[in-house]
Length: 448
Ligand SMILES: Cc1ccc([C@@H]2N[C@@H](C)[C@@H](O)[C@H]2O)cc1
Image (tube, rainbow, N blue to C red):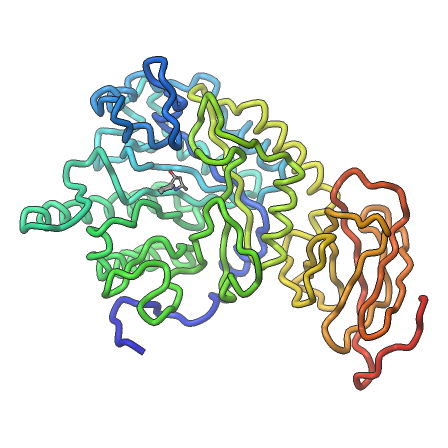
């Protein structure tokens, strides 16, 4: 291995109580809210067809116009308790909220820049209201923070001169000051979600990213920080020059989901997903396909079946309300979670052969129970199950209503679980109770 001072300092998963709670979340909410929400992807009657929160980078929009939007930010209908109630009904266990996106505007009254919420007509601290409201209903809060800050004159994309280095050193101090300020102001938070760390200036700041990570965790023990913060001695990100994950979980799955368990490299990981095809901040016109709630529930099941968490993004309007489609999806997911969350919360990957009908999960607390989250019922009504060696199926029943299902033992160690032809309209869960076979002999019963 290559000797590193600022590579991964831990091999394997974090197993402390805070990370174990993170591992069991299953479902989270992301919220992108800021000055970009005012424009909603449009300006001067023209539509910016990139991600709406990136509109400041659009050459049709003068920076000065964007940077004066704070003078009109006044979300009259914002009510953090209503946001928290919607998230609670949806069944999310954690929320990640943008405190400062790439535009540099701070949704909290930072004392390190005047470009913050206290200088808007709204004035009040949005982050505090969200932290308090979500914490009150038992949802853990994580703060999104973009290192890249287009508004701060000391930001640099690269360090090509002594003056770049002097400016960027000031910028690094500013960044650390803002983060330590957030820890002091919002001690209830459980972690940070870093973004905007792909430029050369940051790749050349591996030592700083390492010490920042350690400083924040010293101030707030148990803090959870993903793999998007750090760079190593050679500018490698997420995985250091020896291929080891730097961070408490792999934070690279943005709008994408690993296909197989091998793709997860056995790490903890999180998928962050948009309901439209792209775009995180509010957009008046959403791009392309709008995922249905069934598609979103399937993504959730797939993530949990591969030992990851699924975090769904919401982009509130400038007035602080959510679009109708987001409210409807939160409700539909919540209704499904009310019946089926046993197969999601505190569940993990099962190393049985993947089947077409859906996904396996297993409760981390019980190894003689396996859940089948079914999305594709075959016309035969027979769901194939191939457990690993020496595991026998004892019982199968519907999670919702306990209806017993017949199990047919096939040759070898496979089974069919036979479904009643009730034509389920929603994804549903079958519970399997298993036992270990005696010294490898397979049970000869054909029908149980
Ligand atoms: C290329 C690219 C850079 C940054 C992003 C940001 N990460 C997401 C979580 C959003 O904040 C998006 O603006 C997306 C794509």
